[in-house]
Image (tube, rainbow, N blue to C red; front, top):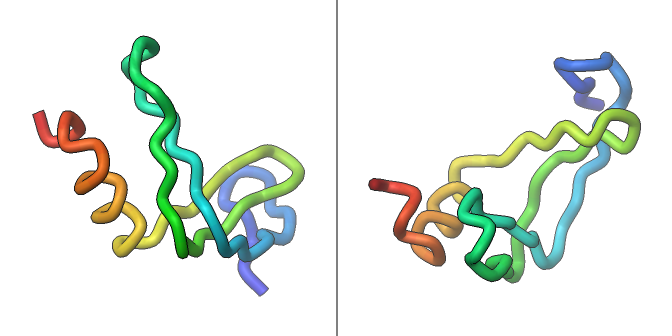
Length: 65
């Protein structure tokens, strides 16, 4: 079991639709289907794997600028 680097709590593995909220407040949230990531239910820390990072960049290309 993985532990959170922030609070040392157990991380929960999540699978499904990942909701990415862009830093640009005027932009709509981006939904990434069939995603998997780890989430800390205690502090909210997320570990985003490379595949999900690539999917977010494809869906929201302004991140590369």
